[in-house]
Length: 104
Image 1 (cartoon, rainbow, N blue to C red):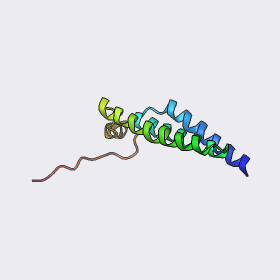
Image 2: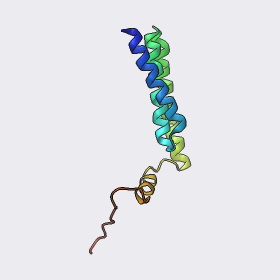
Image 3: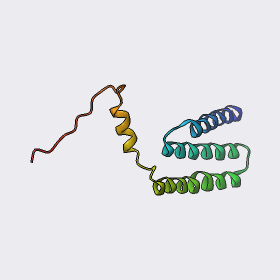
Image 4: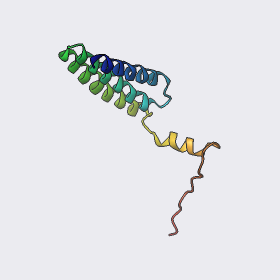
């Protein structure tokens, strides 16, 4: 049972780590980094090191995620709506987006 849980945790860890490197949206990369830290803390629990797991969860997922998110906001990369508008205006999008103008 422990072997399968460790294997699942390692799989999640590897996929999330690849996501940190490959994702183009910086906010998504920060979320993937938090998932890596949480998976690593689960791995520490499996290895019977709960104190290290709690420290990794607090510092790795919590504090680092908040600092990265604040840095993204400070630099100006927090705006996700610009990427959504860019994806919607690409020719490969399925449905056209129509702007609703007020009739005042």
